[in-house]
Length: 249
Length: 249
DNA sequence: GATGATATCGTACACCGTACTAAGATCTAG
DNA sequence: CTAGATCTTAGTACGGTGTACGATATCATC
Image (cartoon, rainbow over the protein chains, first blue to last red):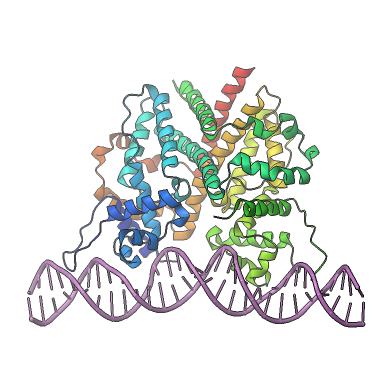
């Protein structure tokens, strides 16, 4: 376990990196790279080959430098991932004045996040709390907060509503993305995979133990696409929030 | 990339392990271990030291055998984790005939899952779709399905409602558990950490850029505990489901 | 030009999952 | 009862990881 002091030091250093405060001393040789370039290379790599294939060596190779060079820019891999997360938040559409009413706005926020998770699938595995919050994440938070302010909720409720929304979207995106990644990894669609597995499955399982499953019919025949599932859940969550808001007014 | 055939083979093998179908040939020496013992040791290790500290070598050491011995029982680490996930599902309370009505039942299911994620924190990082479903997961699914059957929903809607619930609970548990793990890792509570960071943070940030955040007041002062956040979101999600059910009847 | 701070990066360490192989244990066929 | 087949066990090794350390090259400053 590192000391508290060293944790504080790297946390503050990461904050500086996130907010673009460099103030490097003028002595010594010039740096040949920028943090932005490193973060960009890391994002490209993670997009292309997945988070598990993201390594400091490969990022360095992509930039044409030695692996240890990266450590003069970034304290470590975890902090690099933190920078990646904040960087991609910039892709989310900014203020959405077009949408009318809190519901449309929240819906857009949710879909933006869903889309982002599909554009950068590593997001659903990388997410870690306690990352020092960077400027782009802060922009997103400001936007989200604006969606639910001025509609009769207490500040505490506003925060909780946003936490609910992002919790749901993250969970749903995670499930959806994992299906896609699994299809990539094995080269089989879920249907193909299930076809291969089901004979063995039927041999083991005793369906008398699962009357409700049986009476509901084959789960697969009722399965919807991930997108439909997401939209369904989103509508329900928004309905639930609407109940709260209507009770407050 | 492995061949489709080998994927199929390990999938079927994992199914056999999950459902307890051994049929080992009688030739050769007897096995000194059981899969159950291996899974138990792995769960203890993950509980105690986290998923990142779970390694085949450490599990083997805990059992007093060589690392490679495990591979005669289990195809690989991923499959072992799949067995661990199914095994802990057995801890969830079984049929809940005590609860009245779908809402109370779903509430209990959600809280059981929330509690399970806190008892075995590695669950929130390990979760992977496309794991061949084991007997205990199947029990849970049967239970969940029974909660929402016979209340006027179509089979498709029942599946979607459950997917919504588990998506929300997973997302919320994930966030909550990550906070706890971060506190363990750094030895700082979130408040202590924020106290250390905020001076630097205030130096970088320009609050004029974030009027809503500012007007809402310091987010920390409105922060609730993870448990309260979870219960708040759960109530909203259930409200949303209730809207759907009332529209159907 | 000397000095001292700094960037670069090769090497090395401690891990990881697991493929391979050799050795020993046990059952079955003859 | 023996021989062979077949299994378990486990040591070794390979290619990967993050990153600590130290040597060297490069620059701004005195």
